[in-house]
Each structure stands twice: as C-alpha cells, then as structure tokens.
Length: 416
Image 1 (tube, helix red, strand yellow):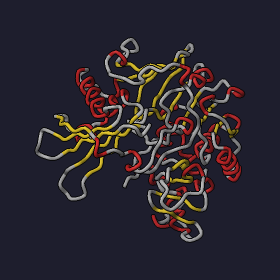
Image 2 (tube, helix red, strand yellow; image 1 turned 180 degrees about the vertical axis):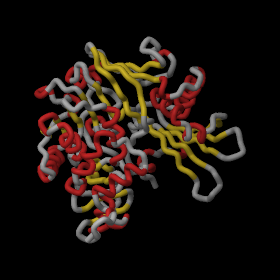
Image 3 (cartoon, helix red, strand yellow; image 1 turned 90 degrees about the vertical axis):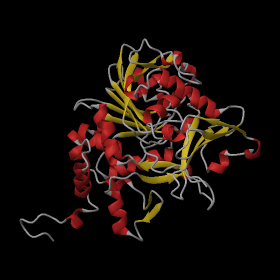
Image 4 (tube, rainbow, N blue to C red; image 1 turned 90 degrees about the horizontal axis):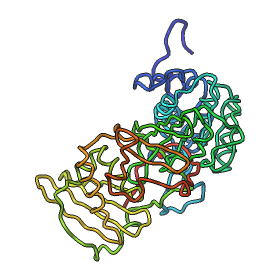
C-alpha cells in the first residue's frame, strides 16, 4: 500500500489504466479529450481469458501479471483468429478480431473530431472498447456500433455492460451503416475498406467519415472525408494497419499458398530497385491504386547479405511475381507467372508516379458520391484514372459491398 504523499512506482502502475495513460503520454499519443475515457474504461474488461500479442499467447489464469501488463500496454491484442473457427496445428492463423493499439485508436478519434453533442456511428464493434470510449465521453445514447459477427456483437455489448456503459451494439452489415438511428454527425470504421459505402455518406449528411482505406497492395491510410450536399471528399493520412472488411476480405495464407508453377515462370531483369519500392510509402500508395487486387511482401535475407526479394501476389492466387534486390548492382532479376504480369504492372504504375513528379500521398484525394468513388491529385478535377494504369481507380456504386469487421490486424503476414 502506498505511503501518504508518495507517488506509486513504475512497477506498481504497470498493468493498470494509469500505466497505459502514462505510456501514451510519454509517446505523444493524441489524448486530447479522450484522456478520461482511457483512464476510466478498464481495457481488461474487453479482453478474453486468452489473448495474443504478436506471436505470444497469454493466459490470464496461467500468467495473470503478464496478461495485465499486455492489457495495459500500447499494443494491438488479437482476440480471435479464423473467424472463431477451431484451427488445426498447421492451419494458417488469420487474425479476425482484436483490441486495437490504443495510440492508433486515439489517432482515429482525433481525426474524427467528435463534438460533445454529436452522435457517432461506428462500423466494426470488435471487443467494444472503442464504442466504450465514445460512450463514456458522449453518453451511451449517442453511440451506435455495427458488427458483422453476431457473437462478437454480443460479447461487445456484455463488455460494455461490465464497464457500466450501454452504447447500442447491433449485428449487421457495416456497408449498410445503420439507417434506423440516422442521421449521425460522425462515422468511424475500425476495419479497412477499399471503397467508402455511399450509405455512410447518406447517414452523415453534414458530418465526417474516418476509415482505414486501401486495396490489398497498400491498405495503410486513414481516409478523412467531410460530407456536404450528398458528396464526401477528403484526403489521406497516417499509416494504420487494420483488418480488412470481412465481406470483401481477400485470400491470405502462407507464401507457398500463392506460389505455383515456379518452374514455368518467365524471367527478365529490371533497372527499378525493388528495395526502393519496398521502402517508399508514397510509391507504394500510388502503385497500390493501380494494383488494388494484389499484395506485396518484402522478404529480407537472414544472412546479413543485404539481399531482399519483393513478392507481388494476386488476391485470386493465379499470378505472382518476384524481384530480387542485390546490393551494389543496378540490374535486378525478375520472375513472373500467371495471366497477369504483376511486376510489369507495378513498374508501369511506378513509372506513371514518376511522370507525375513523384507526388506524396498527401496530394491525393478521394471523392464519394452516389455514383461511386473516384481518386484525384491536388484537386477533384484532376482525376487520377487519367494518369495511372488502373484496374480499379474508379468504382461504380454497384460494386460497393464492404461489410464490418474489427480493429487492428496486429500481425505481419506469415510465410514459410
């Protein structure tokens, strides 16, 4: 027990809300008006008995202190894999629900710019913690959260009840929003989408939308859109890593699941350094606009040689490409297989980005209307589809079917 007048030690506050708050302050997290929520809403109430942090599996029963330390650390905590299905020992484990990294949650809430009297629609309840922060600050009657997984929705409601809160948490398709309680002043998604549903725009007619956004190649942006007269418009910021919409989730697995016919691959060389692509977020963003249905995976050699292979893998698992980086050379080996020449597509998009003057992501913007979404550079009149080779820069409304999932992915893609 603390003696009067003494401050608790660092060891004493670890594994407590105070310890989490201190950590967030020390790292410059965007606490703002959310400090009281972080302190008052106990994260441990929103976590199951067994959690995963990276590759570490922690049982509260077996390791109670380590469990609490993880609960009150600024880390993403995986709470469900493979949609809750029993998984075999060699089965690929895809994180499908988590408690997001608190600093990233705060970043999104800061971008949302919630006003004290505003009403908020959240897509993707997950554990319910984000809805709880909102409810603590605004009042439970001002928060509606939609969760695609009925079991998760039920758990999120129970978790909030344990914390003394009662936001409305419903099971449903997040792409449809929740028109029953519209209009809202703010809409926030806790999963990444490649398209902003127009339903969100309709249900926040003069509001703001914040959502992780991007296709398979580069899903690491927050889209921050303001809505006016039936149109949402805005730009991109941050580098969040959230799970994809469950109803539009592409295939994922081990690297071997995507590689086939390696003996039949075509071989060539390129002067474009795969390392330069892998290390340039702006290049990855613009290439990703042209390759929304393929993902990239850089694999660095573990022998201190500095060598690296950049894999590009189609979501449909039909095509793949690799480009090998070797230090002190200006020519790199390329292998490609399948109906698509994925390295050629990526290189063409990179060339188009260079022709634009190597713009930063900050110059790109997104507009959403009843006809779909479009991307532009510098101003809405400069449509990016006229500048970049594209398989999906402009989408029709009929293609909009994103649904709700939950929070942060928390794990790098596994491969073997």
